[in-house]
Image (cartoon, rainbow, N blue to C red; front, side, top):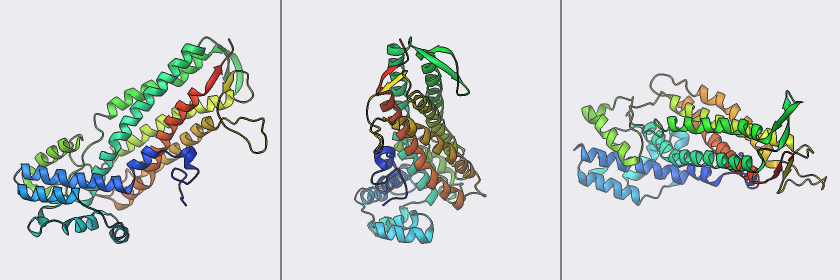
Length: 351
């Protein structure tokens, strides 16, 4: 049983995306958190803040750690975050003389936000690849059907004759711009989070920035001062997700309209009706519209998450956890579905 269609036992067959689900799984989240702790220890050892032996002990513990998930769940209910209990469990398997070196100078938000950024790295790659694939799909359709005729419509009314190439250009243009936007977004994302208790790295003194820079290099992330209460980079990423799914929703809407008994479109594949065997429903086209509208409704929540009080907010932060994973799943599902939909077009327009 699931309350989300993205991982529902059967609805996920339509809406689910296994790669996106894996990015947000508890196992991958914890694995990324452990990578943070290893990088922190190694960076601090390199800066002579902790002993090399302590860094080795922390790395060994993290690499051999098996979480007590029941205890994590129980303590999150009290602490609101997983890190205090995770660190307690880790300390239990580190030699006594090195336990104080674990998590030195870090705070829970550093670990959780950096874990998110580590796990978003393959998502960013997936977005880039997905956009390129769909642009290539559109190029192929234009080459095959671009000179065919279509009836252009304005405000849902027949207007003047256009070509398939004209319609495809209206689909492709935004995707080309999204790919350029992604190139810009990648200059700042994914980025390390490391600021300590209140963002000042007070426990590390003047070595804080050097430790953060080393950690970023070890984790393959951009280096930047802490952004605990500055959530614009997360919201900008969410906005980008909605732009992608919205543009794909436009393609889906157009194809769904073309499928209304028109001789201008022929699709292969499923879409059967239980009551009307003669029908072939444009399921993937409709899905693209639904995913676009879903992400558009989530954007408001993500913009609410910009409002962090003082140096950290529990409420705004929690709101991100509730919204962002489903937006990622919506967008990656939309990319995959759009490619399948375009590949199912057997004829488009009139020669």
